[in-house]
Amino acid sequence: MHSLIGFETFEIRYQTRMRTLRMPIAMAPHGVPSAETSEVWGLISDVHGNYPALEEALRALGAAGARRLAFLGDYLGRGDSDRCVTRIRETADVAIVGNRDLDWQDRVAPASKAWVLELPRTASIGPLVLSHGDPRLTPPLSTSQISRDFLKAWQEMDRRAARVWAFGHSHHARVWRKASPAQVAELLESPRVALDADYRYFVNVGTTGLPFPGKGGPSVALVDLARGIVRQIPLA
Image (tube, rainbow, N blue to C red):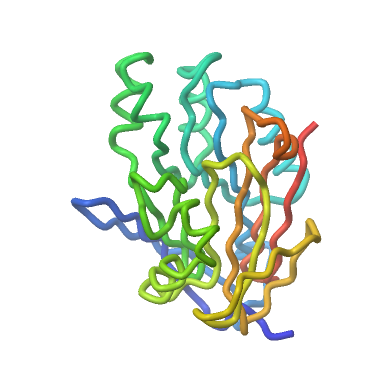
């Protein structure tokens, strides 16, 4: 098994059609975690206005050791969208927009609408790239790539020097990997995956607030960039 991370610093890069923003993030030398610099990311997607589920997601990720939080879109929906937006703004280190946020922008308070309309469509955190997964927002980084063995996603990850792509949208938590563009993507069964530098990984975080029949219950994900681990965490 090879270490996924082999550098001392990386940066978060938010990408929209209009701008790129960068924020430096410290890493321990050679990918070795320390109490001050370990980067353990909790990933939350598809809240859909479900405030109790959002609080449960935050509790579960805190208990699992998440130090930073990234939200992958679709915050609005039936329930208390404005309260969800307020809580996400309080806790998010990174947030990107989802299709439901654009569809529901006129059903929320002006402050919530303004916030979701300012969100980027993707974010890059060193070897980790994030998108919501809707084909209309980010065609190469969308759930349409699942049936295409992630070929265009691979090309986009290559362009960004990314090893892990995390997304939501389809409300179905799963992890795949492949070692080359031509290889058929391998669906991994374990809820805990050790990341091998010979592979790229494709992580569907699932949904926090709106589980669909036949696609499993609500879930979040944890990505430990220092140790090279992805965990799928079911919610109560």
